[in-house]
Length: 187
Image (tube, rainbow, N blue to C red; front, side, top):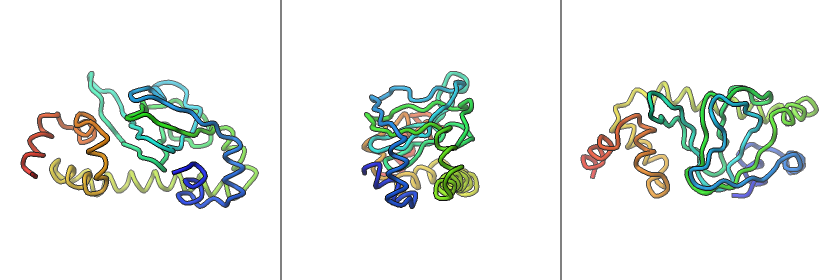
């Protein structure tokens, strides 16, 4: 999916507005496992995934806990403000080789101040994050790990071919051995 298509179909920007936003964006590439944004550092950019998979995680007690796995067409968010730089609380890395587009948060803030379309665009991104977080905590999080895994593979069947079992276990907050046991029970 190309960046223009992502902006117009996923975020309902007009062709004119998507062209304007793209003129303020930069295409960047990352190799598998490369760090995109490190926790506890300033987070200056909003990223859009054109191709590849991105993972957001926190480190606790020497292990990584995956918060999100973000596919093509989506936007990984690493700090709470969409239009102001802030300190990232999470690390983002590339699960696969990736093509991303980024816009500085301050530039996006300027566009929001000039255009209702961009203000609505950032509001919609914020609403999506809130919605996904609400669904996770109210629905998904309450399930046992086996049901979480079933839902994950039903919702994102391609993940099994593109993401390591260790990363899936990290997302489920279980050990790889527990994930293997769950997979045996399901098969």
